[in-house]
Image (tube, rainbow, N blue to C red; front, side):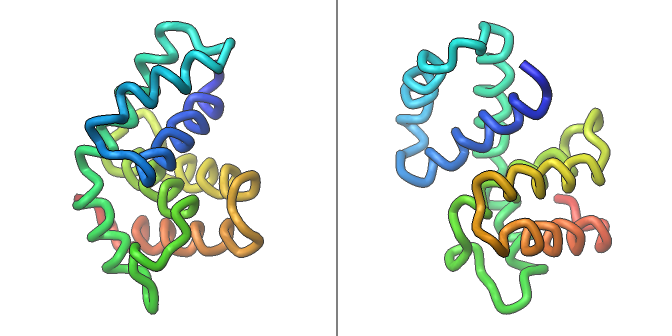
Length: 137
């Protein structure tokens, strides 16, 4: 799988987390991975590890997003947009192999596919503020 496909599958699993307890996520991932024929064991490990790494930091990530989202709270945001931003912000702060601008651009591209009409600009604005403020956990 390409980096974008891995990122997209990780986003989808983070979105699933909105509907399942963390304790159920490993089983949910297995059910999901079985349906994706192009996902080999290495890809499965990457997506699963990345998903749980983001989940482990979700409270801190959400706090930082809340801090820069003027007029918004994470509880009011679209769960799709929030899942995209959580993944991108995790990459911005904790993955040295992903440049900040790449994380933001990839989030915007995913938002164009899965989000609403305003999602790309909303996500770009929030992530841009986080990047500009040097706001990493």
